[in-house]
Image (cartoon, rainbow, N blue to C red):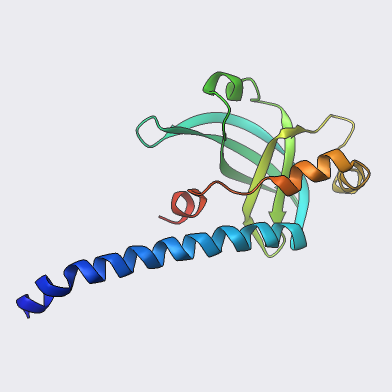
Length: 152
């Protein structure tokens, strides 16, 4: 039995990690198509910016309300500096979520929402009438570490 473990250890290790990376690839691909097809819009407020890892990156901590329930979520700040990301605290931005899985959501910190837009109907009209905003939404996909950060 020990011989089997030593001989096939490397193969099992490689197959395991290859499986995880393939799952990650298809997860990100499906993530984008689900948001394009089934994504719904709401307004979220950035509450804080916190680091993760060993100072390698930062996340937005944000909240949004749906059907009288408050949700808190996390999203990477992307290519922004920590200083620029902190300037967005307590401001409203677009959040896209999946109706069948509210916890699967993303805040778009490059799409600020003004105080005049206060409900989902006005928000949807604003997005549908503004092609520039629509193109911003379509161009953004989750970062490659999205799966690992949220599920491991």
